[in-house]
Structures are given as structure tokens and as C-alpha cells.
Length: 377
Image 1 (cartoon, rainbow, N blue to C red):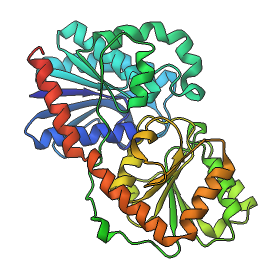
Image 2 (cartoon, rainbow, N blue to C red; image 1 turned 135 degrees about the vertical axis):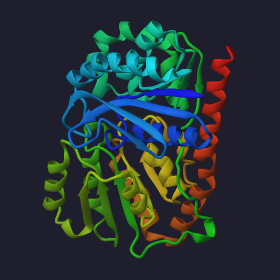
Image 3 (cartoon, rainbow, N blue to C red; image 1 turned 60 degrees about the vertical axis):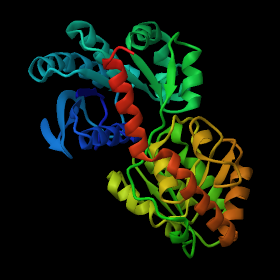
């Protein structure tokens, strides 16, 4: 099977959605399929390369930052990618198109499918859905939403990465939607291999954007200075400098490590040295870092939103807290940092739960879906 994957953010550009697509593409290649990815270019990256057997074709989109794409770069990706996509289709003759993100990637997939007569499937993330990430996409969805309906209805199959994303999408689009979780391509430790660090180490991984609410991390941990802990904040973004100022203002410089934007491999390495994933986000689909944290055996303290409902069994492998309830976050983290035995139980529970998100099972699901579409089911 020849698959053309259309996605505007693909590693090293973008966040968890791109990483999820990469793992799926890699898994399909390992099963003998031919996969070509059509994605955005940024200075310093090759325009055409092979990674783990995946052909990655990058097109000019005026992208300047790995962690953020504006409307201009999205429109440039669609315009330039349309011609590049038609050329790839003419030369490679793919059987099917798989697109991640309804906007902007889905718009290109819909156009390519219409012009070339090739079916496509859509994997929708939370930001694709009106009201999914209102602080990020609320304004432009007011005028772009009418144009998104054909993207959803034109797909032969629509997949949502979490049940929350599915339910929200069903309120806006008249299509059947199947849930296929994001997976993690990591080695799962056995529960007996999990050990609690001394002192416990917390980690956050993501873009320093309002959606991720990184300043809340400093506000919460400033109330736990009486306990022994350390914390790594992995990522970059417009709120990074403000986060640094808040850490300094709270006299916690020695407690924190801020390495900036790091590769997915470094994220996994950091998770292997950590105990708790702390994510007080305001909105999430199914965060890949959450799946990776499960597989690494981390307890998860996160906001009671979106895909975290799929990842966290409250009071078993973590805590789900209202995003604005600082005292509840403080109490939850205090209970884990203060009690190593409890933290160990939570970490072991995460390892057991992670089996539900094994990337091999996820790729098998996608392979079956792709075959069914090609068979006309």
C-alpha cells in the first residue's frame, strides 16, 4: 500500500500531533508499506529526505518557529503544497491519503483528493474542532468554520485521538467518528523496574503557550518549597521568559531546569529520569507526552480536561484537577512528593495502563482502517 501523509507539522517542527503522525508512518513502513509525508519546510531542514524509511518532502511555507504557525504560514503551506502534492501523486501514484489536522492539512487533502480522485482519511486533533482550544483558535473559527465542513464530510473515514475530541466534533460535523488513541513508541518498563527518585523529579513538556498554562506550574510549586523536589520544564514558546522571571521571583532557580526546545529523544530520556508529569493545561486532545509518560511509568497530575480522561485513572495513577484550582494541585503534588510509597504505586499503575496505548496496536488499527477504505467498506 502506498500512503501519502499530509501534515503541516512533522518532527522536528511542531508538537505532539506531529510526533504521533511520525510514529504511525514509521509503523506502517515497518509493515511493508510505502509512506511519503508532505509537510512544511523551515530553514536548516532538507527539502527531501528519508527518515526511518519514510520519505519526507518539505515545502516552503515561510515557517520561522518550530513551535508556532500563523495563518500566513498555513495558507502558504496549502498553496505551495497543492502543486507539490499533485506532482507527488503523478509520480508516486499513492493509493490513499492520510491527513492529520483538519486545518490546514485537511484542506489540502480534500483538494488533492478531489483533483486526483484518491480517497483520504482524516485524523482530527482537539485544535481541529470549534471550541476545542478557544484561547488559540476561537477567533479564526468564527469565519473559517463554514469552509471546514467539506473537509470532514469528504473524508472516507474520520478518526479522533480521544473520546473528548470525538464528542466535541460530533456537535459540529455530521460524520461518523472513530476513536484511535495516540500511541507511544517506547520501551515499557515492568512495574518492578520502576524506582522513585530521591528527591522526586517533576517534568513538564510542551509549548510555552497560554493553552499549556506553564505559569501555573510555578505558582503551584512555589507553595511546595518546604518539600524536597526538582523539576524540568521542556519546551519553548512566547511565555518562556515570563516563566523564567517567575521562577527567579520565587527564589527557585536551583530547583528548575529549562533546556529549551528539545528533540523527542531527549524528552523520552528526561521522562526515564522523572517521577511525575505535571500538566496544568487549559485544553488538550490526547497529548503524546501524556502517553509517553504512561509508558515511562510516571504518575500524572493534570487538568481535568480532554484526553487526560483517557490517560489518568483518578487517585490510581494520577490526579485530575480543575485547571484553575491551585490549592487542589498543591495538595495532590504534596501527597505524592511526601509519600514515596504512594508515588511508587501510582507509577506502577501508569506502566500497567500504558499497554492500552502501545504504538504497535495503534498502527494495526490504522492499517485496518486504510485497508477497509481501499476495499470500499
